[in-house]
Amino acid sequence: MQPVYTSGIYNVQGDSQTSICITIEPGLLLKGDILLKCYHKKYRSPTRDVIFRVQFHTCAIHDLGVVFGKEDLDEAFKDERFPEYGKVEFVFSYGPEKIQGMETSGEWS
Image 1: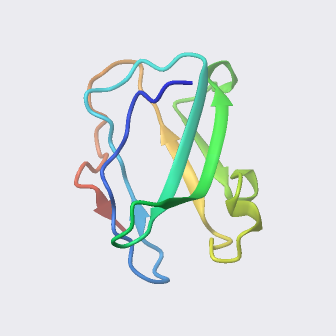
Image 2: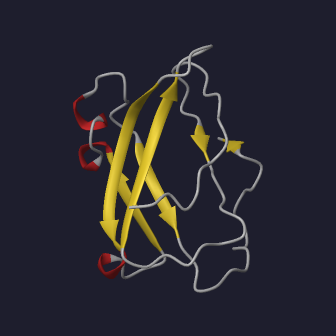
Image 3: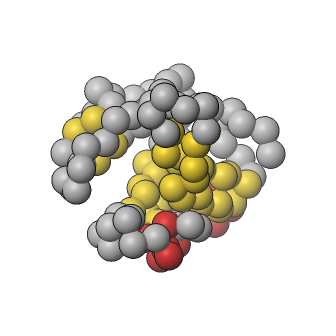
């Protein structure tokens, strides 16, 4: 697999139930195997650790959204630092236009 998108670095504080919304602009045409990896970037260090990863095939997606809970996330399912309520949600569209009501500011709760 070749990376097609890399987001910026987001700073998440403490134990709050913060959500991070990452909007990919312009939209990407996704087809086939999708792999999402989330990393913890160590402060002032070039190294990073995988927090979770999730992989799926676009043929398995039948709606405009899919949610993966902690138990579905490689690495996170066994990590007590990852909250039980933690999840990753994908929201898709049929075209490159923006979806009404979706935040694009990066961080929201």
